[in-house]
Figure 1 (cartoon, rainbow, N blue to C red):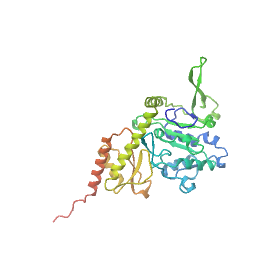
Figure 2: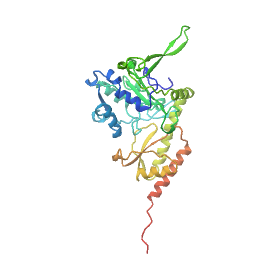
Figure 3: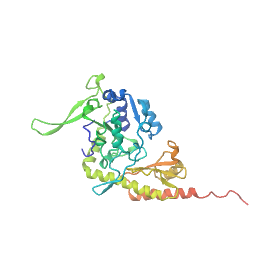
Length: 348
């Protein structure tokens, strides 16, 4: 594969990321492979830095045991990693996965801790980041058990919200619990390699009680485009794209942090997202940027009031140096104007 997950089986495309995660939480997938895990296969742990409304959605799907941070040994979650390099190409920390704030987690320690506690490890990843980060199948001593993600970064346009495609991959021993269809490689009578539908677990093909999927809409067209995108770029090209995203956010964060009233919220390494704290209303600043045709980021002040006025900013390979300078110039202008004292209303 051009992008490695270091796991055995990858299912056919699903609906977007939320669907692939939903299948893990709600379908027979975890119920079947989770027999005996922690003595209760319907328990789930959700990272405590995940926004409350998203944690609530997960808790509604399954009976959540607790937030991750409340159970982990001290120093495991949110543990920063050293910056790394590979073949001279600057890259974020090699061993990590970005959390909601964009910071990279110590996935090796987290994965080993979960397995020692008898849990399944479910990773949600940005596939583009795997061009420069360690694949989930190599996390810790045993690797993640299930990996989900959103395929939009793989050359799929935003298109006002879709269509995108979700993906799910897992270990070979869990493959029969995956939704959809599994394509396997084989050879024909002449010994030529080819591909065939090896497993079909939809209710159209087998008894409904045994089926793991009944969603009929296929994202095949979008996946075909993403496959062509990956094939054209290849491993080195994808690594360059990922490194361009990382270099872009580093440059933008450094320039924005030089503006009076803007600071970085965290010092941990990151991939292509960063949280910035403002000394003014995040909502008003983003509205002013939007008036200039700039989507300045996501206001997370309401979700994390302890951070103050904070925004989550992301840079992808689609943004040029001129785009970043344009953003910085308007941010500096907006904040400087808002620092100016209003005119005195008193008239003599």
